[in-house]
Length: 111
Length: 113
Image 1 (cartoon, rainbow over the protein chains, first blue to last red):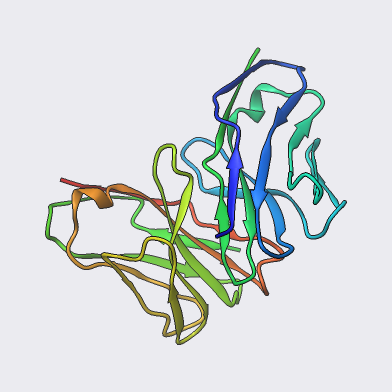
Image 2: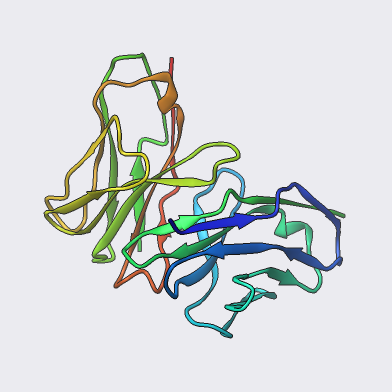
């Protein structure tokens, strides 16, 4: 079945460093792809999305490009802040009405 | 705008007890789902609904029951709680076919002793 694989964390960076969190997927069709963020003690919030190949989703300085040839949707940010510390989830919408999530990657940004 | 509201936020149950986790949304969303979140396992889908009166099983439905009598409400029932159901439960809703992603509630942290 469809699945999402994320890099294991935690990822620890200094403030203003460049961030990449890898995400690859397996799907039979042409899924929509999402990144969600979860701050401590809270639910998940949609960070960005892309619905077709070569689309780039962006929000709050984060970006991710839907790469069909490599089945990837890596999350990037040029300069992270302490406030970006959270758990990040990659997800895909499969051919039905479900979102399938990766296991999450914890990001810790140090001042 | 309340969004997705889950109650209670915290609950401790004894093994064998039953309870209902409540979920309500005020956005007239058609799609609603229940997920559980366990360390290192991401979110796993328990049950979902594509409209009032229509529900279906997700990845881990055993031990849980749902119904959808109105568009707004999607309660999750634990029939006989087990320690393996200790988890954080999230309800989520979406407009349309999920191309917009889900709006999540703030979660219910359940401990079964």
